[in-house]
Amino acid sequence: MEKEKVLEIFEKLEVINKGHFLLSSGKHSDTYLQCAKIFQYPNCSEIFSRELAEKFKGYRIDVVIGPAIGGIILAYEVARQIGVRALFAEREDNVMKLRRGFEISKGERVLVVEDVVTTGGSVKEVIELVRSLGGEVIGVGTIVDRSDGKIDFGVPFESIVKLQIKTYEKEECPLCKEGIPLVKPGSRKL
Image (cartoon, rainbow, N blue to C red; front, top):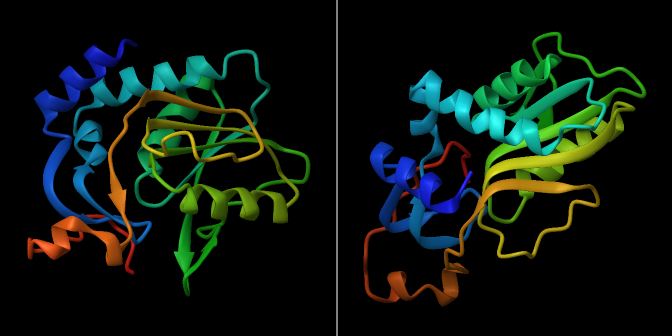
């Protein structure tokens, strides 16, 4: 999918928001990507998930997993496209875990997906979880890679679109210095 087409869909669905945001990573930014808006529309969810599944065509995948909340619907739909099981990991006592009777068997080949990757923190937690259960992580996929090429998960990493969006440490944030109110739109409690 061409970047222009992705951005056109993002604009139509109001995925890209401007302001002063506290990201799940703890960093600040003037741009927040609310990819949950994509998943309001099953046809858009299918388009992006099919595109991501296509990037891992030729890989043997047994399970697709995503971190709650951003990766739940994406994991389900990518798994549906591939024809395998879908799981999600969630935090309990600030630790990523499998709950609800979900299991990963030793040797299962797992694709990890997330809606947006900035620092890769949630994805790294899911990778550790999968490996601790004996699963083999074969790759990571995301709709938006906003890491600016700074992430190495040690496995193939694919995205539908790469966006260069500035992020700041709290102490260096020009938006804080301007006194612009900070908004925390994501799902992780910091």
